Length: 212
Image (cartoon, rainbow, N blue to C red; front, side, top):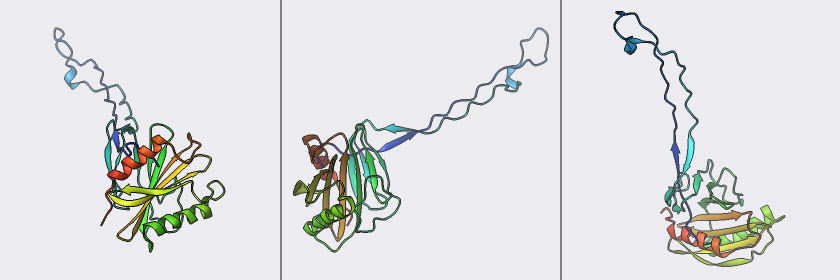
C-alpha cells in the first residue's frame, strides 16, 4: 500500500432521451393554419439510455454499509460495497463478495473487509501473513517483503507488502476488537511496493474513521 489520495464515490447520471412529436394536419377553416396543439404524435418515443456511471472529479467520502468504517477515495476512484460478511479467517481477493471494492482510473484497485477478531494489531498482522501463505501461497511467498508500522485513522497499524508477481499491499489494524484490512493490488507494478502506492495507502489510511 502507498501514499496518495485514496478513495472517490460513484455518481449515477441517468440519461433519458425526450420523445419527439410530429404535427399531423387537422381540419379547420381553409384560411387558418392547422391547429397542431391537438394533433396526436406520430413519432415513437426514444428509449431511455441505461444509467451511466460518472466518476467524481474530486475526492469523496465512502462509508461501508456492512463494516461501518469511513474513508476518503481519491478523485477518479469508484466504489462497490461488500454483499456478505467476512468469515474472520480467510484472506479475500479483490473481487470477492465479502470485500468493499475500489477501482482507480489506471491499473490499481483496492478492497477492504473487517470483522471481530481475538488478536491485537500485531497478532492480526501475523494472522494475515499466515492466511496469505495458506490461501495465496502459490503466488505470494511468506514472509512479506515489508512489515512495518503505519498510521490508520490516527492509531498504530501495520503495513504488509508482497511481490506476488504484481504489487499486493495490506494495511491492517485491530480497533475495539474489530480487525480491519485495506489491500491494494496493481498488476502494472512488479514489486512489493513503490513510492506512488505507498503515498496512496498512507493518504487513505489517514482518512479512515473506524466504528466504535
